Image: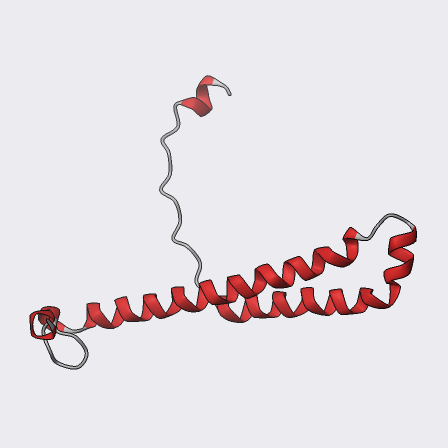
Length: 103
């Protein structure tokens, strides 16, 4: 690193991009599972050539994708709850009750 680059002020990080996260993760999970199914007929060939991990890697990807779907659905639900709570006046819940009334 040169002196010139070391003296430059740091820039603020950009805001994260929001998009169809649930759809993207779901699509990726489906693709991983389809890849697993496409490789099953060649199981013997993969086993003979020592590449059996090629069959199980897409299944692991699909399994992790299921965890990802669960995670992003919960994240989106939490973001929507936070957004609706921010829109209600004076800390009221969307039903019109205050948090103290719920206890």
